[in-house]
Figure 1 (cartoon, helix red, strand yellow):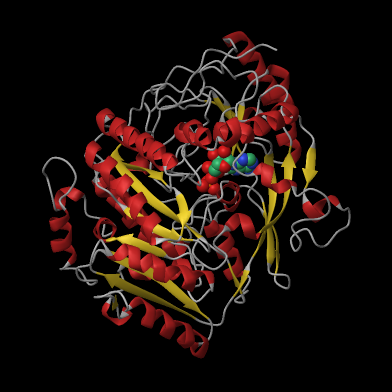
Figure 2: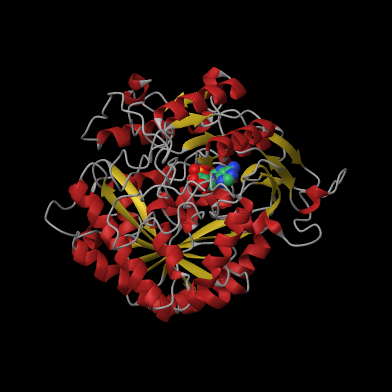
Length: 601
Ligand code: ADP
């Protein structure tokens, strides 16, 4: 395996492995891997490590517990994590740690990894965890990069990696336009299966890179770029193992013999799905998802705008167009520095001085690219047959050209390798791997995001960019901003790309993020999703009425998970056994992820 990881021609195929790449993307993935290897300056430490035990569990209890778990699942399905920490890359990612670590590499590590093969085995693991008071942390595929990857929040938890053995597409219904999947089904896999079955009338929605699990991405409220891009809002029905081991089906799934689990999300009574997303209240073992009808045609478009200040006018133009669905997808407004970074050359190609790269250099570089010089570029797509598209595209053209210097890019002038075509594929439901390229902006590149939510207003966009710019400047970090416009809100996504092997750069990234989160909260903005190490801080900003929401979340946690075994601390929700013992990671608490023990009972 170690050799495979350094052989740029080897990429696992989907036909060999649930987390592999489809054959038709192989060449591109090989290219991406060669690219990752080319900027890697440090070799992985290949030495086995000392095992990290779960908090409050000593070696003898742990050994006994692991023995029991092996009896339940089979000896091969429980692996001790004394393994070397090899970062790998997107397609060969580890489940031993967070590959894009922002703390020390061995801070967020599990003690062991368990591979259940069925819902019943997940229930057995949960009961086992309650018996031994061992924290467990479920993942689907562990490709939640920038948010913690496969790592648990509590050091020494047992990772429950479901993807390896629970990766079936249980159903694709071509009449209802729905599917039902297990945790280990990637966007690549669902796309391939739909193609194989010849269901041309069905589209999936995919995020920027298609290797993550549909289920994990949706639970973490990830997004894609077709009109079905808000994955959580288009899922229908969950099967969940509760922290005490019972299994429930939500919505219509609770009605025996139903045939509407994937077509009507609510069922009867309280809509319980919400508590299982961005939480630690259950392990989801099946999820229904609706599929988009092929709209009968699509056409990507891109516009560039010359000046930083154009942002305000542009966002004001976008708002009514997006809310009325003339702009139909969660499109992207990206900054010129991203246009350069996504080409895939490291920043040292353009600049080797200290601090953030000067903007003049970026503009000069952009002027030599097919998009020409610009400050903002909008990537969008129009759906439907030509006459329907024309109606919408004409309105968009007239509106966007109200910005002085606003320019429509003629796609015919862009080479097939241009990033525009990756956006074109993604927005029409074809997964890709192109987006990875900007991570190589620095050697040993990793990324972590600041992603506040605001209304679609020019003044908010400007205020948020100013916060980000000031803090990036202070920390000497290149600012890579993009706005993702949902329907009535937008996320500013600022990806900090840092050399993960450089402690100072990791600290700069974390300091910058913590400062931006606080600044944004002081102006009334909160983040929609975050990395494990920032969850406490961000949860702490949602503190209206003396933290009433967190008190409610904690009450739920204590009732549903009385022994506090399921993903303690995820999304800032700590079970009572951990509360008041300094487990929270905040701006003041430094960089240790650990608290002062766990209450016995
Ligand atoms: P990806 O789909 O990108 O591979 P992950 O499997 O890493 O995503 O999932 C993202 C996060 O969502 C995980 O870290 C975990 O906290 C949570 N999660 C993932 N799958 C499940 C699941 N089946 N049940 C409960 N929580 C899950």
